[in-house]
Image (cartoon, rainbow, N blue to C red):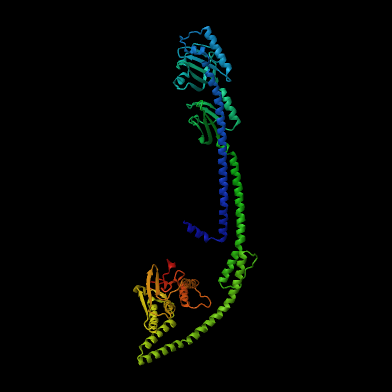
Length: 600
């Protein structure tokens, strides 16, 4: 359905229905605004919580980096002991015991490591690339019989290009079979003089150190925490975190996004440490985030439904209050339409409807008076028609008199008088007797030619006229007596008492569905002020009181406009001493049928 059809159907609705529809349309923006406010509030909550969650994750990452940096400083301690560097660089056969001096040096170094840092070291390893080794495990005495290649972390750190490596949680066994979950930090030790690798220094710390920090931040803020290393292995995960490990293993860098896990939406925030390469991930359920927004949404819905119901009731009441007097007025109008003039509308208010009711009462009263006046007018019109029939003898008497003059002039041999008398007789018959308001153009031109024949005799052939109209335009209809007044105006105002030879041209053309008849002369013309005055008279189809001239032109223009519409009529151009041109615009007719521009 097109917009025009929708507007047309709306225009045909009852006024009560229109008012209800308009009120509902007014309420619609309020509903849209409420939905927009709810959406904006939800988005703001998501953004705020996402930022807060990001701060939590970054704080945990910074805390872990601080702890790991302390471990990093501990792994640098072999460079501070030349004896340890010599121990790692020395060649030693498998299982060879330490000397007393080496045992004292390494024991002192290990004690220094254990008491120097602010970390709880579970176990440590010193391995030389040429067979030297010293291993201190939990609840075990130190041993030198373990091989570097048999350690579970050896293959991974030996293949790494980094000097420092962090290994995620794994288990270590003491000599008495006690298992401990630890996290490992390894450093490749290189000779200060040659830069070649001489061994490894490895420290194990309890996983509880990381878990305590993660649990502290996770419990002090909403959401759950998980940590994965640079290869996607799980380092830590809250026990209450109900997501798959696959979901949290593929993020690097810093960011936040909404993920779907087990049919639930959750906000996931992640941050990767530049020190360890580990990624800290915080996850909070969207249902927890939108808990407050759901309350806001429900309140908006309940309040909106209540306001809508109240607005509909008020709209119906107001609409009935406004339309009931109009409906009553419409019913009384239908009674008046059926001829009942003994009606009156009670006027209770002074608004537009009250004013309309008052006007209706006045109109009905005047219609009642006009009914009697119309009856009297019809009687008088009948009497006037009878009088007109009685006066028909007067034109016949005039025609007979002109015929007698023509006959006597013919006897005297005065052809000019005969011709003028005959043409005058035709002009009178055309002007008085015809009851047709429209005639073919050919018939109107015949009337003009009769008039010009008299004027040529009057002006002693100092006047010349031309008619240039196609034959197929002659059958088109024009208003009777529309051309002759224009031609007469050319002679009276265009030539007057001027000397010389006057010329009048009548040209007919077709333009679209219109026919243009141009009547132009070579008379004295008009200046700009005179031309504008005449155009104003045509525009308002009236003459100022006491105005001289122009009655014929205004009369012709008014009859054409009343008959065919404002698109038709007279259009005038003129210049001083250059003549005047009057264009008469008629609708072109074919086979006697009027075709105005309004039909197109």
